[in-house]
Length: 244
Image (cartoon, rainbow, N blue to C red; front, top):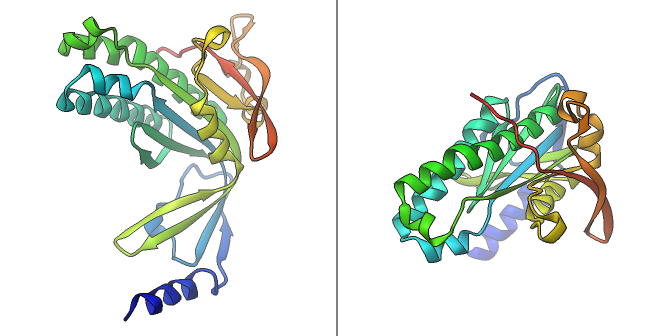
């Protein structure tokens, strides 16, 4: 089969074939794998997306050899993944130094926010000291592991894309895009130190235990992020959540 025929065959399976979309039950915390979806099948879910990025990876590349840089990448991604999964989040994508977690079902906003705050705590108090102990050259160079997280909630369509044996699941909706954009915000000046940002919808769905510490609101806002010609309100925080 020539390339033209192959392209037309793929169009027959995508554009020219009606997609069957089903909606996931709100009570379930599960998120489908790509292999659980047919190529002409989609799953509509109400989900909270968490993107967490490792910052200044270019600085790491300049301060460490390739093997050491790879160890740092692995440490950050592995610890972040462990935390997300411990709170019933599902990992469906890695992108270089970024990991995406999807939370569905009851308290999905609380669990996503707690994950982000756990990751901040782990980065500051567990992973960074371990890196500096094992790689003193990174400490002497002044490079510190830092991260930024973005969280947003909304209805999202999950679909399978690619070819058998070389495919992935794609997320279509405002929530994954907004979460990714929020994780890209780099705090500078008066914004420095705020590493977790959440969309307004996520904030409004949080329980008080994830909004209030003592008698103080952990979140500052409202701020606005421009995306696709629209303004999206969000909140930010410096807080971390300790764990044992």
